[in-house]
Length: 334
Image 1 (spheres, rainbow, N blue to C red):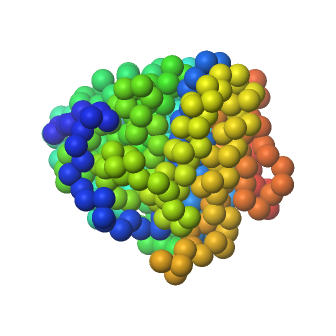
Image 2: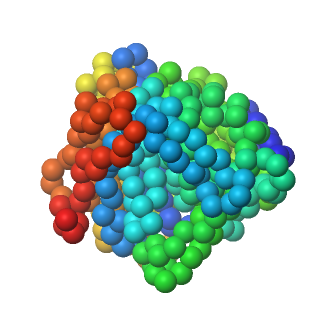
Image 3: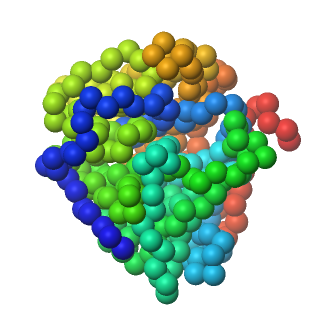
């Protein structure tokens, strides 16, 4: 696999003048003192009616449909959010506090590395599922990347693409309870790994969508301030500014940090019908999730309900090889 391991010191090759798309799922990480927290939004046209499942250890999984696709029994219990009719694992946290999430990176940028004969495969849409099932930390995931091929697969019947299968347009954001974090992308057939904690690789703590991550790092290098649009780079910069303020105030108490993190969630939330005047279109926030990796809890806030849902590992048998639905959208068919 052609692989580049990059850090904040990388000089980005993309011009900061490039105009990004409106697609704008946003992810941000805060790790300081007692607090090991993240926030993430899911942004897409149409309802995903996300379900929350508890998955115990020992579940047999196959992470793709090729003859070389990896098959394992999960080593760790996990909380997972499954989205859309395909029930993709868009977001997951395991019992060790490893968080893995899919965000959109358009197919103008995404191109998987060549599939190598004899090397085990993991489908692009299955990577977060594979990560939390099999690894305890970000370092473990990164160190094993060269031993697998993450291959392009297709996702069918997404909202706006009904009766259609499209190549999974994805990149990944990972973090663990220690604050170690990574952005993983596949660009022009090369896997790019941006890896480190907030002191080593500050930009890695914040992710959104198009263009590729080097563009966003270039904005950080230029100390670009956020704008008010719902485009990807503006939402990422707004979340970054909130969390940088938390570090500047040295918020170390977990409860205080969780309350402060709400500001990051609010700054990137677009509701369901906020219009971006530049794109003359909307990309709604379907839900926002907050993860507490020390307490092993998640808080799910759907855009069209008032009740924030709370889930933890006491709600299912972690040692039973079984998946249990813990929560669903109130309007979902029972």
